[in-house]
Amino acid sequence: MSDGSSEPTRGAVTLGEQRISYLDWGAPAPDAAVLLLVHGTMGCAADWSRVAPRLAGDFRVIALDQRGHGDSSHPPAPGGHRTEDYLADIEGLADALGLDRFAICGHSMGGHNAIGFAARYPDRVLCALANDILPAPAVRIDQWEPRLPGRANPVFATVDEYVAARRETAPDAPEELLREEAGWRLTAVEGGLQAVADPRSAFDWEPADLWEEAAGIRCPILYIRAGRSPALDAATQQRMVMQTPRARSVSLELSGHNTYLDREEEFVSMAHGFFAAHVGVPVA
Picture (cartoon, rainbow, N blue to C red):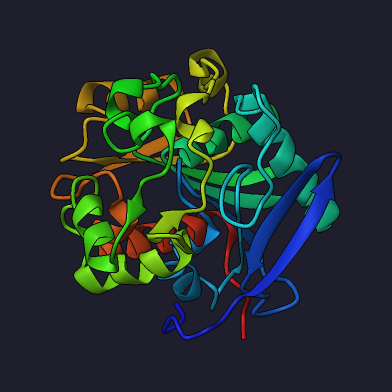
C-alpha cells in the first residue's frame, strides 16, 4: 500500500444534462486495476481523501461526486435521486473514461449503489464492497430533519461548530480528520460556512429494493457492518451473506457508520486485502 502522499487530479464528464465530477489518483502501472469509490448521502468524492491515496499505490483509484454532491451538478427538481439515476451516472462516467471492468467500493448510499451496479452490470464489476448498508434501506426523513432544518443546509459560524455537529454521526473520527472534511464539504456563505451538497439527495432519495437482485450477484462482494451504527444489524448482514454465494462479511464492532473515518486502519487493511485478492496488484 502507498503511504498516502499522492494527490488527485480533478476531472468532469457531461452526461446529458448532468455534470459528474471526479477525482483521479492516477494509475501506478499500465495494467493496474481500477477502483471506483462512491461516497454516501451529503458527502463527496473528497471524503475518500485519507483512504484513496493509501490504495493508489496498487490500484488506479477514482472517486466520483455523485449527482447533487460536491462539484457535480444538481438534478432539476423534482426527482433525479433514484437508484437508477445514480447507476446511470456510474455507467456514464465509466464509459466516458474508457473503464471496461473495475472494482467498486461504496459507503452508505454509495454502498447501496455499489450493490445495485454489481447486480445489474455483472460484466463490468470485478468485485464490490458495500459499507454499512442493506439492499433495501429505508429513507429515514426523521433522522435528516434535525440536521437539515427546513430541508436546507445549516450555516455554521465556525469550523468548530461544524465539527461538533458531525460528532453526532461520526463520534469516533479523529478531530483533525473532521476539520479536513470541513475544507471540502463546506463553502463560504454570508454568515459562515455551508455544505455544498443538495439536501434533496437526503430527502428525495428513492432507493430500489435490491434484495432479489443482490442474491444474484456473481462477483465477489464484501459487506462491512459498523457495530455502533443502526444502519445494518448483524442478523440482516448474515442474511445478505447467506443469500449470495460469493459474499463475505466483516463487522467493525467499535465503529460508527463511517467506518473509513472511525477505524481508518482497519478499513484500509480490509479493503486493500479484499481488492488485491480479487483483482490482483501490478508486479513492479
